[in-house]
Image (spheres, rainbow, N blue to C red):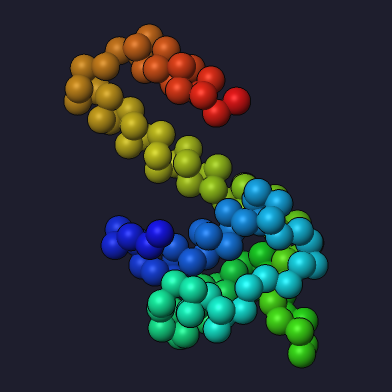
Length: 121
């Protein structure tokens, strides 16, 4: 589940964000507690707290006193906007650089993308 490519707190943030994007968590839903996250993933509780705190700072989560952390209004849209921006600024240029190194033509790249995309539609 967890890998060593990214800091663990970022991976936890992405897991929570993925659950918001997929609809597992809706607006005002209470998310899994930091204690539960720590036990589930066998990570230091401080790491879980950092992940959830960062999401709260970004306006994705908010604290409901005495209840826990909840999904904020507009959280899904914020996550999607940020991830799309990162995709177009980071992943696409990396893809094009690698394709260029490998001598993959634009036509071949587009055909491959279309073929792969069909599997996800």
